[in-house]
Length: 288
Ligand code: FE2
Image 1 (tube, helix red, strand yellow):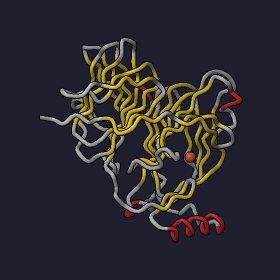
Image 2: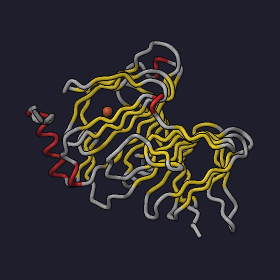
Image 3: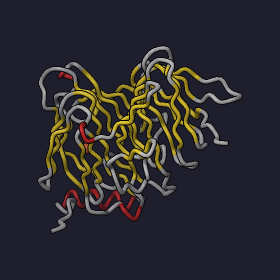
Image 4: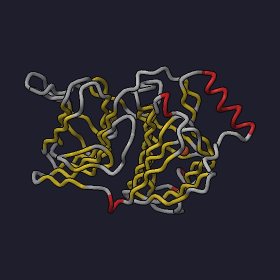
């Protein structure tokens, strides 16, 4: 019999500003929950007011982590100092492994209308922190969708749902990242390996979490981030309205972390090295 994961914590995201002045809701990477191994940060940006997003995220570095960007609305152009560039539009996903270091910008491409999406930071294990940077990027039309006949639509960005596999491959955290829409009253269940960290981020409607044979479920309204306790099954049920949420899981690394803004390494010395590399022009490695 599978053990249903109970709720560990329900987090109301903090409204903050990052980049050159992008208003966003931060669910992970705050004083409330600084690290949910291997996840370092989770941001939900979304606004219809260009003043709250147009300045974007000008050129900045990353080392030792992966950044995962998933767009719901609008367009973001990304460009890095090694010549990689592209535009992420509605429903597109980018899993960027910064590894040894990239310098990039992430800039909204529209001056009006709504921009909305998510960015997740995934830690890399010590052995991969200085790996060659890598992009995995998929257009909305390529993202596999599982449509269950009971009224659940599941976009599989990473991981597997009913034998449908997401296209993101070879990620050390062995992640699940799915976007689930449930019609009112519909049940959803997903097996997640025991020991993996799991959170759900409800961004539309409301859903019931953590119910099992002996415990009442808890109704959670958007926007909230729900962290689960250990177990092997996540169960979620939409309230009478439509509910939409992300479900994200990954294998913890269990390694020491030294964190300084966009650099996440294992030791203070490695952070110092990143800063030195930045000053001396040795930050972005050549792989030619
Ligand atoms: Fe970035």
